[in-house]
Image 1 (cartoon, rainbow, N blue to C red):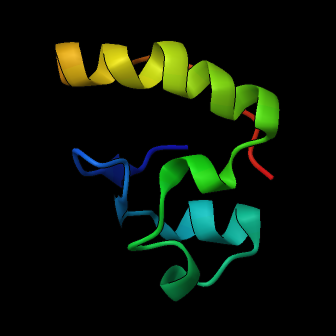
Image 2 (cartoon, one colour):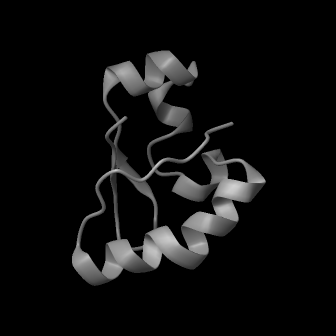
Image 3 (spheres, helix red, strand yellow):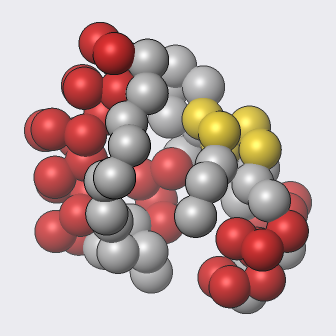
Length: 68
């Protein structure tokens, strides 16, 4: 599910489908840390691999993370 984060990993935009699938209201997602919604294993992966690649390349395609 697509989403937009800023340089600090804070959610800027989350489409309605994301919110519906996750069961979270927008005000509990927008402005909050992306990694807060990941499982512990995926949080470690995102911080060590995914997010550094994102900051270097400006985008990441095909990454899979499990959300809580």
